[in-house]
Amino acid sequence: MSAAQATYGLKEGIDAALSMIRRKMGEKEGRPVIVEIAGGTGSGKTSEVAQKIIGALGSDATALNMDNYYKGLDDRSIENISKGIYVNVDTPDTTDIGLLARQLSEISEGRSVEMPVFSFKTQKREGYQKFVPGKVVVVEGIFGLNEAIAKYGDVRIFVSAGTHGRLVRRLIRDMKRTVWAPGFILGYFSEIAEPMHQKHVESTRKYADIVISNEFDAKSETPRLETREVQLKFRHSITRQELERIGARLVSEATEHTDRYYSPDEPDLAKTGEIFRVSESGDRLSVTYKGPLQASGMRRRPVYEFQIERKVEGSATKLYCNLVKVVKKRRTGYVIDGVNIYVDDVAKVVGGREQEIGSFVELSYHDEKGIESVMVKMGLDAGKGIRSSYFEM
Image (tube, rainbow, N blue to C red; front, side):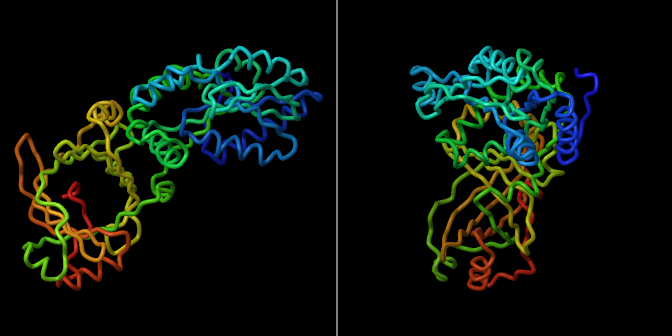
């Protein structure tokens, strides 16, 4: 461990890093100050730390992208991934650490190097380009404090974030960035990425001068999810004939659903207002992640739902190891004016036995106005609406 290692929050950590960098610039007598930044996938080391440091230093800083030192995947690995087989890309063996170490040695003396240029599209090194170091060179990546290169860092930073937050950030980020299905990402993260993080990334924290804690803030970060769930439920019984009279259309016959709610050891999702649920209906298995409630007279929250293979639930429970609650419901689905109407008979499982919660009608849409319109048609009193989820009952 660095003798003077200190831990900070995000803003204070960046300020401390900039102060150390500027002090080192005065001591290095014209030679580059090398800043090494490491941290797990989804820790915010790139967007929240490296980019802000580079932005603050302006033209004095140049970035040496560790992605260019990636060795790439062979044809067999690419084929395996296309078949849904996990291929470990989170080990230092996938990065040309030796070349990077040799080039950092040159850069530390102020010399230019021929930096490799890697294409993730072709999974090959496309050539080399001249890298001319500025006054500050920022090296950032999950292996940014690997033992082989840590000795070249003048300022060494480790960005820390808990497992749950890093996973949710990765799922949010990769919604648009990757062709990997979210279920594959969840399984890969649980089986490969997190064990590799503990072995090869978290273990390098000891080399840091500065540790920046950038924990996931569900309330401020989950609004980046593209989907919103707006719901309101009522303790109410209604027949199919009554629904059809107001124009509702049956979309799914009564089906048995089992919802299993999980939480990691840290944080307790009940305290953060988040939900991680695995739902089973017939041979269909899905994961639903929900962020905290947003301001609304109904139950409004960001939501991300995706199908998974059965093996992925087993993988996910390595991270979400606490089965908090099991809810069973018999659900019939209708739709009117785009608003989903669910007629539910609900029970919770306690000590292996089912305890009845009750019969409900749940209205679900992407905004409150649509639900309000259907409430009028159904003669439902908004004042009797229930914002709680079945998990909370």
